[in-house]
Length: 210
Image (cartoon, rainbow, N blue to C red):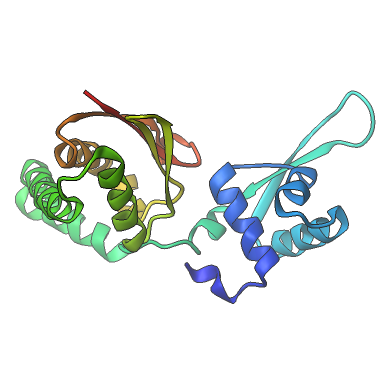
């Protein structure tokens, strides 16, 4: 990620908000084991750099509480493997050959990618396969994590989108991504639980053995 040039505490703050969505200075200090005074100083500096923003929540007594979150500028620091060129290229294709044909091309791309993933994931037990899937996504620039909710029940969470520009202009790619995960894990039910395009701070997929 492009935050490698940041001091470690600032980098940790940005990663915290990427994962958690939002939080207060007190929550940050506790999570990062840093003094509240130091956290507030870093927050002021990050705000001055345009990397975080906050909303003030009035409390029954005392001063308003500040709820911090990443700014759009900060999200651009995290990996985006495709960019404006890809969107522009797809727009040109739509104008040239039509939206239906472009949709078929995108679908074909995910089917091809699913075959590649299936080959790399292999035929081990479910935990082994989903762990390999998370590792592949990390290699592709996603801040991905796996959370086990039961013996054969998992949540795959991605806190950033490596194709966010494409997904914003062509949200159908997200549907293809869901289909791709289902194809990679044919013995599982895969459901989307969270979606960055819906304004949430992460994409989440529930993976359950059939």
